[in-house]
Image (cartoon, rainbow, N blue to C red; front, side, top):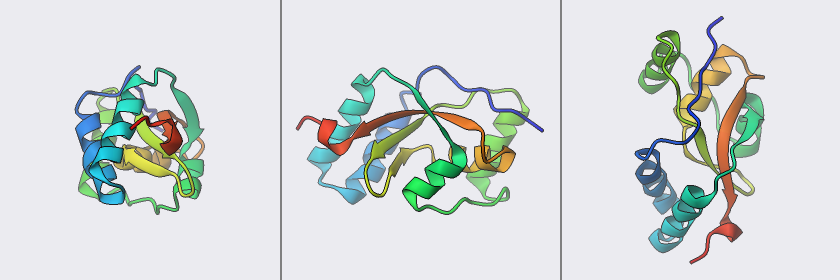
Length: 125
């Protein structure tokens, strides 16, 4: 079985992707504040892939999804994946990293995924 290798910090390109997604859920000003909070939050927490799916209510994608395949190929090549960006709430929002969670789940549902997580109330407007 392949094992993921994770970067210490999210990539800079993850934040605009998170903003784009969050702007669909909340006003762009609030999305900007949440992304700012994610950037400023230095802690990385770890959660099992299966628990991220349960908390978010999202379904996992199959290994033939193009983005999941891309992440699985990165793992196979020994490339490090970027930690996932999350917004705590009911449901949990996966601001960026959905495909990485799917790839990780396919490698082992109990694998711990590094995540940067903030609550909506932590985002200062």
